[in-house]
Image 1 (tube, protein in one colour):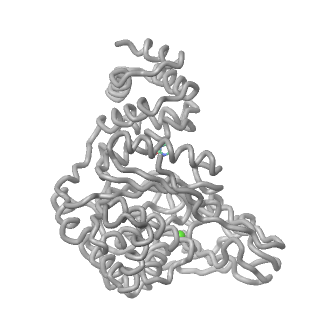
Image 2 (cartoon, helix red, strand yellow; image 1 turned 180 degrees about the vertical axis):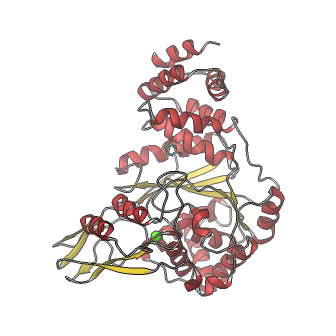
Image 3 (cartoon, helix red, strand yellow; image 1 turned 90 degrees about the vertical axis):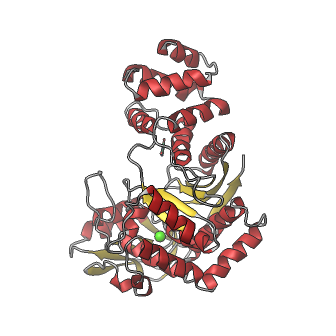
Length: 433
Ligand code: URA
Ligand code: CA
């Protein structure tokens, strides 16, 4: 096989065989195929697209390029949840104990990554001593016993995707549906779950800005998942404004605890119940979404989800008493209110820019080397549609520096106040194929 022939075949719009796709992925990963041929090939895919079969084969070839996590020693159907990323998304912290409280295994591998706030692991490290450096045996044992554990990401997961993503970034080939879908799904499939619920975000704070684009990506990922034997579905949800009220690590942990106690923000609670009921159904607990939702509500109400969260924090080295007294979590030195300049209704909270404001305070990483300040962040006091009076607090800034004029200005610019109530929508669609 020669790479030049494979590039030509794709350039001419023909369908590639499994062997040809494997030849490319293996050759590029081990350095036999140079960047210039890989670049030309990616651009050919960008313009000629890929069939479902090709997408599935590309995904599997990337999965096989590195470690594949074996969850077979964990009893039951393992359902994973993946979000395409947004601002202030606290759903995993809430979903994990909820699912586990229903006796469904929640065995997640998680990373740190870049963003407005830290990843799930960074957030959990707000509990002093919490750690995810577990052996495979410890991880398996915890999930079998308590149904819940989070382990740090293996260093050698989908190396082909890492290398290709970096190349796509500099060859204007990131925004290609077959390439995005196979990139995301390769990581999910390598992580070992039997079934996957995808939360594909749409809006200003999302990777896919329009509902149509989000639905196209969701459908591509769902089809790949199902073709390779993982029961997969997707929800399209809103990320035009941040999810919930808290944006910041410690602050989001507090928000997750509130939600587990039944006192969380309405939008976060609703998204958790929507995603959670799909997970409960995929895990085979019931085939009724209504019943699944009732089960989730019952473990919030009887306190067992919160007890599960405490067990989880304790198992991984944190102090579970902090769950009862979140004031023990890292706290910022200063609280500064951002006040409304006029009367009206909040018409927009531009999620991505509000996320950048939180990052400027130190809540997230711009580069891999950055340290995160777990204490800092923002709490939204108003959401889209809420009435405001001049002088009301729009946002509380939690900072470890006294001087936050630039962050304050950025928040004011990105929370718009209009004269009429704006409609909001949280869940757009369910995608099964
Ligand atoms: N996220 C990924 O993991 N891969 C992509 O290609 C795009 C977003
Ligand atoms: Ca939040």
